[in-house]
Length: 301
Ligand code: MN
Ligand code: MN
Image 1 (spheres, rainbow, N blue to C red):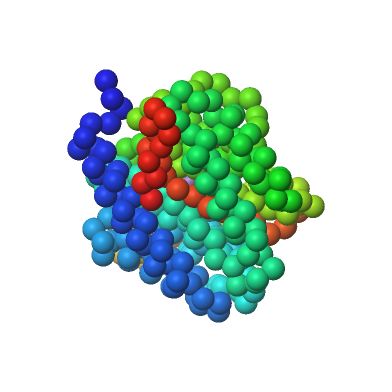
Image 2 (spheres, rainbow, N blue to C red; image 1 turned 45 degrees about the vertical axis):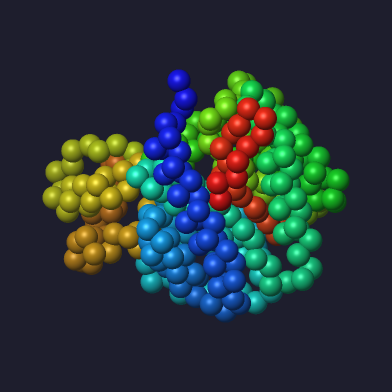
């Protein structure tokens, strides 16, 4: 039995089309000194206007920050001059998730690193097919990056996507490492190499800051405000990641803060830490979502 029926695949395809158009518009939209909040909101608005829903908040990760930064409410940060900006976006149609990213460089010195991430992604796309081991894709990506004088971030991976799932269980490494099992024809994967300079540590670590959150489980809470907030999260995002920006109209500001704290404290929700390169070196990224075929793949984004 196929993993997804025709109706589900059509929803993945529509999700991917909306995301592709949105990514290309964002690539030309982001500018030095622009407010990061404006970039995030514009990306999410584009997705909604085209009939999709954001599968997660738009990530705008700058320079040595590799992933998982989205503007918190009222964010005052701006795109620094001569920076390297990763824009990572997701769309879902009825829960069917696609995920894509591009890097925009405002420093010509890093243009090559942007194109190496794109080449590494193309290598993964050219390598993937049904019944391949994820470690083979990782090996091909690692070689493509190292041959060009750079190195992959070893602890960030691609991943299977599914219905209401951004990370559906299987990882695709960006280095040659032992993995178990094989990819199946009909599965859908996000491929996403991250590239840094040869002198870097080549890995990311957590920052204390968390700007993206996800429902863990709906448990009963005595706090009525927390209960209302949790109900809103469950009904609107289900198991998909969200930002506090999307919760600002649920409760009066005076009650919101404590309700949100309560949900974190009781582990009804969890936060994703911002990822930064361990030696604080520049990071670039490229990402597409693909449908695995017996003899290759179809790029959905
Ligand atoms: Mn992504
Ligand atoms: Mn991804």
